[in-house]
Length: 131
Image (cartoon, rainbow, N blue to C red):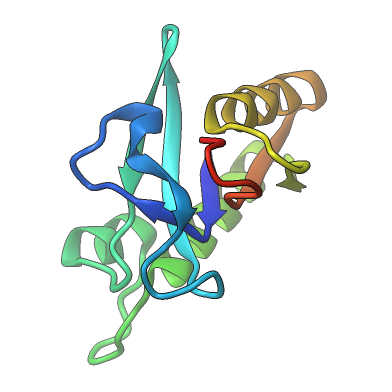
C-alpha cells in the first residue's frame, strides 16, 4: 500500500521506525510518499524518492522522453494500473487524531482485506510523542 505523509522520515529507520514523531523539516505542508508492505508481524517500509528514478519510470511505464516525473506520477501510475487489473476501488484513508503508525498501517491493512479495496493512507503527526 502507499501512504502520503507530512511526518519527518528517517531513511535509516527500519519498518515503522522510518516515520518520525514530528512534521518533516520542510514544514507540515511538505508531503512525501511511502510504500508499506506487511511481512509477517512487521512492516517493510520504502521511502519513495521525490523525483522518479529510471527504475521507477520503467516500473510505472512512464516513458515520455525528456519529461521529469515525480513520486506522485509513479504512485498514480502504479495504483491506476493495479486498480484496473484487479478491478478494485481505491479508498483514501485519513486516520484520526493521535494514532501511531503501527495502528494506521494495521487499520489500513484490515480495510483492504475486509472491503477488497486498495488503500491510500494519509498520516500526520497529530500530537508530539505519538509515532
